[in-house]
Length: 155
Image (cartoon, rainbow, N blue to C red; front, side):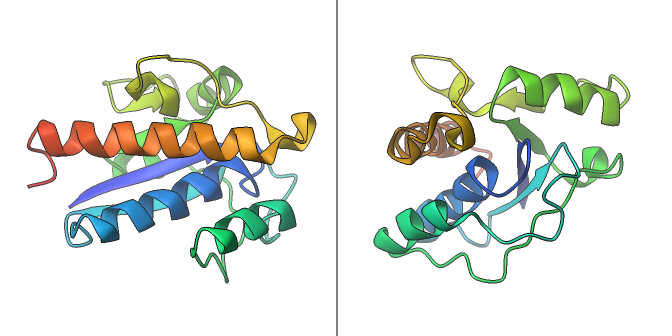
């Protein structure tokens, strides 16, 4: 089982979107018994809050249910609990370094590092462009899933 933790600042927009989009892709690929996805925040600002309504709306439109998801913060133990820890932007990576005390062994990356155009997933909390976020998340999750399949890690 490959365990993936998606991480963003508050765990109410980008990382839960990635968590649930990846779960949907994994299920459609018939790999639910091979790949597990979760998400968390680097900050404490939104702890316990549900997924942000514009994200819920996008996921619902995609036929994806994210009900019951509540924001949680990463903890040092997450480093040992997950095979891949995927940040949405470079600020997330910087904050993860603090929590994980500089541990790096190739399992921490940015989501869009798996694509042909590595970059940050812009935070829709500030940009208000939730559709651009959705496109980036879908592109990144599809590329990550393809990498896991093609490398044989998902078999």
